[in-house]
Length: 233
Ligand SMILES: NC(=O)c1ccc[n+]([C@@H]2O[C@H](COP(=O)([O-])OP(=O)(O)OC[C@H]3O[C@@H](n4cnc5c(N)ncnc54)[C@H](OP(=O)(O)O)[C@@H]3O)[C@@H](O)[C@H]2O)c1
Image 1: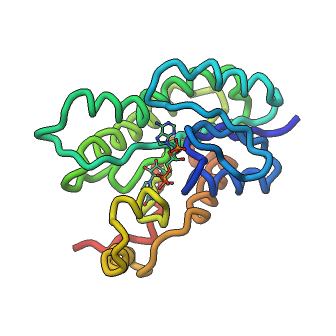
Image 2: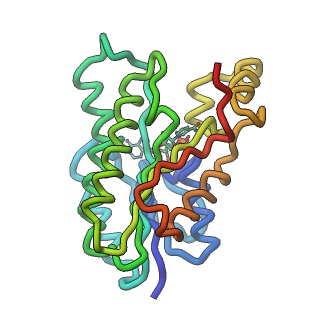
């Protein structure tokens, strides 16, 4: 009987680091993303979460896995687009909602029969799950929605011995951040300077927090900010 991680977006960044961490602890890992997770022995379900109809492939991967052990479901994949709340196209928001909010909901339903004692559903939020900044309205909106979904999940799982939490990373050195801030070293240094440690977070540090949450039921319903302390201006 072995434990299993079902994670979205482990082809790179925080998701990849989490896949590595859970594999190290002996968990079977199933990744759901378009590109593959290259961590050895990870099972890849190569689908685009913005296009409905991917559920069957995930269900098949779960059926091939162990039953009876713990399942940790991590909602990690996300779209981070430049847009604003006053001019955004509705179809654009629908696409972001599909990946950032609807996919987690569908995965919760697929995972439900396998959520044995000690299992967990972890949401990857953001600092922007609890505050807004200019120019990323769909991201801010959907990350706030995930905190709401986590809190609803906590209530709806009452009595099941399955726990849930939302981990909110700060500025983490991944492709998502690099794409957002560009290649300029001065900009990178100024972003690093927005943490009280004056550096970016390593994806492995967030993976550690996710592993801790998966194995710590008392964190049920918690929103955890893993951001090295953000400098307030
Ligand atoms: N990096 C940061 O500073 C930071 C800060 C706060 C919160 N976060 C959150 O942390 C999580 C991981 O972020 P990251 O920085 O590691 O991002 P990343 O490097 O951009 O990785 C995003 C992952 O999501 C997957 N993904 C994106 N669109 C997808 C789609 N349509 N279908 C399936 N998979 C899709 C990508 O896989 P494919 O491209 O292979 O499909 C990739 O594996 C996200 O929820 C993000 O909002 C990150």
